[in-house]
Image 1 (cartoon, rainbow, N blue to C red):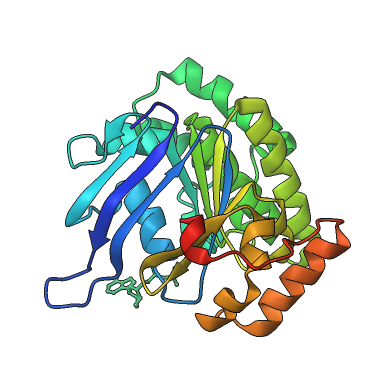
Image 2: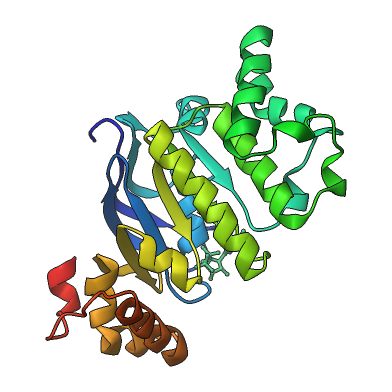
Length: 269
Ligand code: ADP
């Protein structure tokens, strides 16, 4: 339960008592400055992990620690300050009538003083290269610009962890690339840990570590090279062959040589 870490310790979760477990005995750690990509087929539990990480949900079994704090009803506001989340559809994330109001909203929830808020609005809009849009109405912006504002709103609260849950899925490839470039810059500048839930090959390749979910369990964990060397294990769990093959080809094209022998997924856990 170290500082600047997220730790899931034997976490099990179900949405209701009479429903099946959605996460089963999930354990992993995300360290400082890491970029962890979470992949897995639909319904494997990725978004549920994200929601547990910032206290939108609580596990029935096991424990979650964020920056040394246990996630619980009592700690939820402190946790949300540490863990910022950006979702797929930016339109569902806007609350203010102007970009400025929107970025201010999260800070207001955390009771930040007015002068600090003004400073943070400017800083975080600059970080995502949207400093000229303070007075704009969010609904007039492009998809990519909206996601930049959603990221700025998260940055304004100064979190240590940022989760992007399919946050680039609605953008075209160029928009995706630009957003990820900005996020990477911000991550390095501010020393953040990044967690991305994604199907985008480029993003998965660039992550420092990949966590593969299957039916609510951590199926495999390792560097992109390790995970995609075990092509057979990935296709076995229903991650579609084109995705996995393309991923392996992509790594090769970037000059990353795959492990000669496929790794046993158990050894990676
Ligand atoms: P993923 O992000 O990998 O697609 P989710 O975490 O969204 O997976 O979902 C995991 C499982 O939990 C799925 O079977 C899904 O149907 C179920 N689930 C997700 N949200 C809810 C909810 N609010 N109520 C009940 N079941 C849910």
